[in-house]
Length: 251
Length: 193
Image 1 (cartoon, helix red, strand yellow):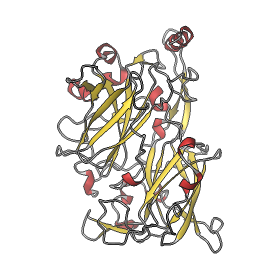
Image 2 (cartoon, chains in turn blue, cyan):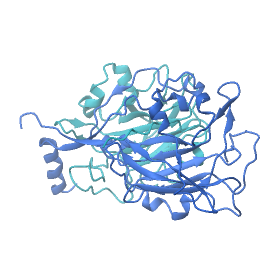
Image 3 (cartoon, rainbow over the protein chains, first blue to last red):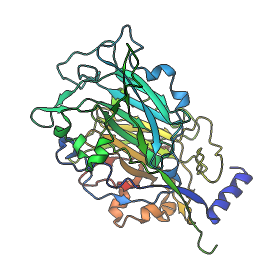
Image 4 (cartoon, chains in turn yellow, purple):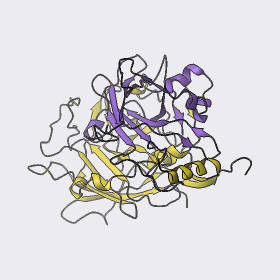
């Protein structure tokens, strides 16, 4: 550390400084101990979460992405010898914070089953065909207005072992880094009017029906490309922030 | 304008398709001078390894600075290749591993000092939202004693779940062990941030 850096650091320790504070997501996310979701029974913490004040580590986060993706990474239908089977779709939207501000330059990673409802993963033993032309992973970085767009195929519904005759509604997994540790989000995007919604314990783990509905993309004829692909629009909203000034006692 | 926040959903059992990066565990490139290894096992409530988890870390550089526009102290001068962010999927035995530099202590907005630490997110099938914890270092006893987050945990036994242990067989002092118990005996402290 240079002498100049040291002066900066010690100044920060003695003078008050301003940090943004990210709003609470209380009541939005599913409770960790959702009993209807069997896998949570041995994995959800039994002790209550301890409230933590947001400080420097929580209001900062990895701002990376641009160097980690190429334009091809946003098209899940290319990169193989042939075209994947299934219904070609465009999934597009904006990443915003809860104050309506766009979240630019943030990494979005997605993964999904193929059109038959089978994942290209050794653990998936659903007896539906793998597609040699579909791996089901994609990534992109939002632009300066928070916009993103993927080209993929519509994933199929698939059975799982949670309970008798359990089927997951078709979905695409989304992972977002956001601009701060506090904004990190992993979620799933669903398709409109899926008859499996009322039966799915993961979808229904979200207590508020309005919050649940925010995971469902909207069919969009404007986004749909003639003779090519159906368009689905889905905006993602991360926790917004407010500036809070902390005063050093005695100042 | 106020928008409704998008709710979380589990990463499910197939996160390995989309999330691991070849260089994910390397917060600094392998062989970086002064680098340390933090490794451990993720365990469920039956004491069984969790082979389909993802562990992510976020931390300050050795000067206690962040390369981020919201660090009010201005641009950091992090060592070459330091990313601050680590990501490790667990292996079939539930093990994760991060290669990084030791973070520096941090000033608090209200005048105190946070002990060197890493913020941690754990994702897995069975977790409908990430769980958040922190890694502190066993050889920072004085700094840990003054840390406001550790001080917010009343039970010393629970507080101890956040302290990475030095590997006793490690003469060079660069290996730390931090196991994550999601549930049950010795359950790791998780935070609502």
